[in-house]
Structures are given as structure tokens and as C-alpha cells.
Length: 343
Image (cartoon, rainbow, N blue to C red; front, side):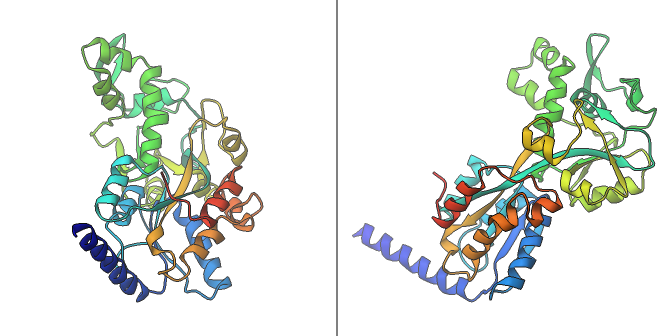
């Protein structure tokens, strides 16, 4: 009897959700500021080429977008979350607890994370992960000992870098870009400088040491940017010594204001990211609420349009903006067409 009640209840919820969602006729999207320009290009083209309203695309960061995505099913919840990282297990669990059980993962391509500064500012030309760790970490290795970070200028620890005050503008913690920066730059630099080994030798557990490796100093030389890349650019415009963390596409669309540095000897470009040679790159995604397909007009059509060859392929408008096309795009197209959900 209880199973019958449960089924009836589930059907009732689905019916209410479907009816409520049908009251909204446009696709609603939120999340990653890195994916934002790509989604905006697709949304505008979709509105122009289909008999559906133009989707509404908002930013806010990957974590914030996925949090909204996992609030539940129905017209008051978003249909798609954009993300510059994979959805986490804890987010999948939060989704499930709110009734969002069928999620379609869509990988749209790849992007690089670049390190850029004022075009006429100090000559920041070449970085290693160790440089960023030494610039931003609360504790560094100096003369063989782990000490509170004494560095105030980039040249204090690397004579090849400018004699300029450290002023780093990095993505805030709600951005997927921050996690990639932590993993591929700060953690790598922590290991390269010997700080990780020194922390463990001092008695820290490996897990605690790894967490300490991605911490940043709190004396104002490292500034978290909670907004999108336009805010980072504004900070750099206002600070000649500023160095910011950006997505490759944003940099490529602002080369009149910014110059970019190499990382580990490799210049960021669509070619070096596609080949895997550039060390700080990541896949980009969006996540679809399958329960909204067939209920929110144009949802599946938007997703299929987004990953079509003429949009996300190497000769499409997204590549022209800076997206590195996914060599496995055909598999993604098939998964969207089949509404294949995550396992």
C-alpha cells in the first residue's frame, strides 16, 4: 500500500512540477563565469534561429550555479548549470536529496587558465607554479626552513621576475577556476618548492599538508575576486603591478589591455591547450535537469544546438571566441540526443 502511495505522490509531484514549469517558456541557466560568454553566444543565436524565446543566462560561479541547479525540480528552479569543473559527488547527493536525480553531463570543450597583467605594466613574461606558490602562500621554504611568507615583491624570490609589489587577483572560492588554479598551480608549486615535504616532515598529516598547500596569504597581496573576469580586469586597470588569473578566451578578447605570461615555458593558445602541452587547462561543462526536458520549451533543442558542429566545432563561433573544441564532440552530441544521464 505504501509503495502505491509513494508512486501516487511521485506522480503528483511530477504533475505539479510539469504544470508549474510549463508556465515558464524560456530556458534558465546559471553558473560559471568562464562558460558565460559561450552560453551567451549560443543563447543569442538560438533565439534568432529557433521559434523559442532566447534563454536567460546568468553568471555567479560554478559552485553557485550548481547549488541553484540542485534546489529541486519545477519552474522556480534553473534548467541548466554551467561549470568550469566536473560536478562533485556531494553536489550530486544534494541534487538527489532535492529530487534532481537524472542529470545529463555535457562537456563543451576546453579552456586554459592564463596569467595576465597590464599591457604597459611590469614585464611579467614567464611564470612557474613555484613563483605563484612563493607569492601567495602563507608559509614558504626559505633557507631550508618553513617560515611565514616574508616576500613583498616578485623579485624577492625570483630575480628573473619584475621588482614589483605582489598584487595578485585570483578567482574567489565559488569559482571552478579557483579549484583548477589551486590544483595545477598552488599545489604544484608547493611540491616544487619543497614546502609540502617540509610540512609533512614537521608532523602534518599528508591530507593537512595538501590543504595547507592551497591556502593563500591574508595580508592583502592576494585578492579573491567573487565577480567575473571583468572585475579582475578592472582591478588590473587600477593597479599597474596587478597580475590576474583569467580564462584564455577572456584574455584573447582583451589583448589591447592585457599581456600574458608563459607557464612552465609554454605560451597559452588553443593549440597548446588542445595538445595538452600547456599545463593549466581544464574541460568545461553544462549540466541539464532531465526532468525539465519536454516540459520547458526548447531545453533539449538548446542543448543540441550548443554542441552542434557548426557551433562548438573547430570552425564555429565558440572556437572563434577562444573555446578549444572537444575532439570527442560526436560522442557528446549522441549523449545529448539520447538524453544519457550520469551513472
